[in-house]
Length: 273
Image (cartoon, rainbow, N blue to C red; front, side):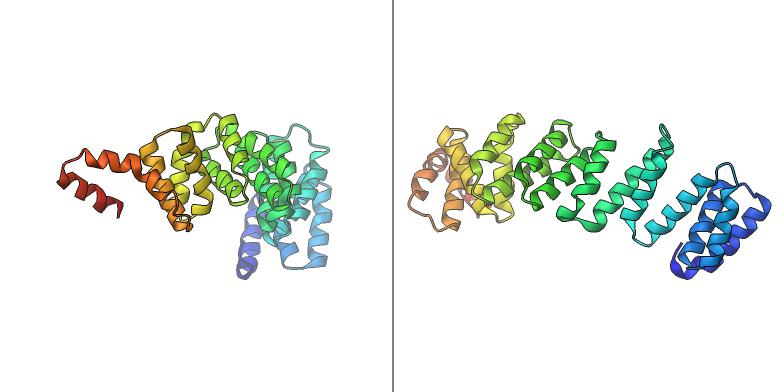
């Protein structure tokens, strides 16, 4: 509930509980609203009444967690759920709540500060590949490169949806830092060598010629797709002010153009421009 709707929400919950005194969600939300309204004596009195119920401990914990999450106190909410999990083994609902709490905590802090909640999240739900992806970036922000690559390895080998974007981001980051050999080794390890040219082109199209250059050069040196790799390599070198080798790089493209009718050459050049 929004802060300006708490009074109305409390009234609605009171009416529901008058009709259904044991309504689990209504009891939990009533406690959460009282806490958010900072009605200390009222929330303490209601919590005391809940404590006598069979499911009171559960309702009280969830009431506090709901209030804490609404107030942006995600770390506190996660820790409270951890305490509850210690006595509620095998509770699938609690597991889901804890996963969501860790995710909210990580989003609220970001960067290197998200390492703790993301480590907890991946330990609890290793199947959450997006969490491994995010953990990798948090490790990277903290300067823990090996840990970052290990986390990304879990995400990519697990067939993370949209993994092509992540691979491009990782390769580009490594190349920006002058570690193109590491980037190429990763692509090989992930059996994504065929993605080298598309990744290089994607980086070039976004204006990241410094990152794209060593990838095009690797393709050129290996003799793979010399027409395309040479053309893009020439463009990258020109953009970076390295024009000495531009003409040799263009040779395969120029040779191919010489075999085309003049009107086709004009179309190709127009497309390139």
